[in-house]
Length: 453
Image (cartoon, rainbow, N blue to C red; front, side, top):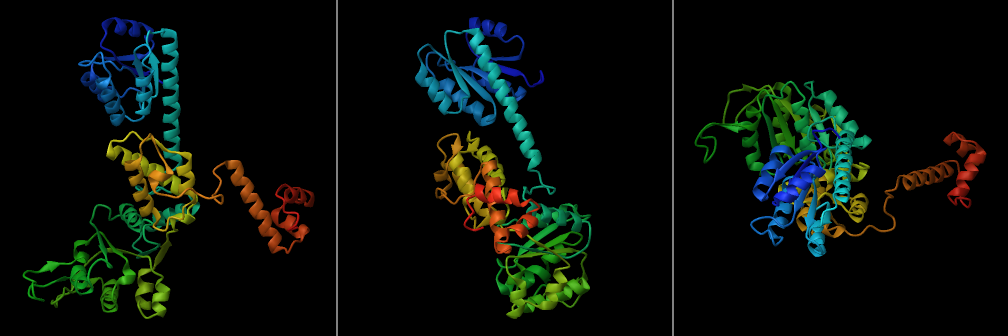
């Protein structure tokens, strides 16, 4: 750790102990505070990695109420800070209570400076390791698109496609189940395009009644219908120079599909009740959770419109088909919501991680986000549990979290698959896997697949 990182805040009101602690920690960058107000001021100003805090603080130096309140406020402001509480002799109950509230460790008086120095050094080492892990996690889980978290190959391929398409003028179609992040990708496409400084206008075609959707999109002239007291531009005009995002396009009624097709071909709009053609320069991005080819077969969607909007098509995989993304997204949501709610919650317990991995997530990322938010609210400790998330305990068929177990499972699946393909022919199976027959036999015995062979 650098000297800048080795900031130690000591919260102690006894002048004698202050002097003793200053001498003990002279090799650290020391910050001193005597009460809660000065401690919070130093915390906000210098952001120390470790805090050494007495539980008996004024105006309640004989009790612990003020000390506990100070501890909770410190962790609410800086949840990654390591707080070591110092308690009176034989005051183990309050020390344990403080740890339950989120303190890293405790030390009971009288002071043994050598032991205390060791505890503080260990706290700094732990903070440095966790900080390094957070940095590596952020780097490895970064996505090429701002606001989108992706680690799976399938989702990263979608991100790369959006990157390639963004600088062009191609009309883009985003396909995917509800909650997979279609609007986020549309916004990312806009932000990476030359139109980024112009408006991004989104409209959900399924959320607006059919009789209002046309005027919402194309605008209307004064007097065009009852209640049209003034001329009003539509969403397409508002998006001039920028990007128009048409979400749930599969729900657009057929008559309006014809008018949209004409706009895409000629790039002019006619307001409802108007005769004037208004030229509009807009990039169109469409999205739907429907199978448009089936909709075409059922005469619910125009084939010519489909080919006009799908110059480039990106299919967004559901969360259940994005290995590893659920846990990464869940951790990102956890830190976001814990900060919003002022909760000192740092992680999921092992059971919750297994449950997140095993669950199918029919509502995709939106469902995951809601579950984690509820989990942060319901959690009673520093970790979110399976019960907090409202998920069932995963069964024995859950995916393994251990790397060796994952490798073994993949190896076993590959053997079973190649044996099925070759109808049990060992020579062909070994050749397909690029290994020798003896090695193949060893693997078959290792995974108890002899009967299959």
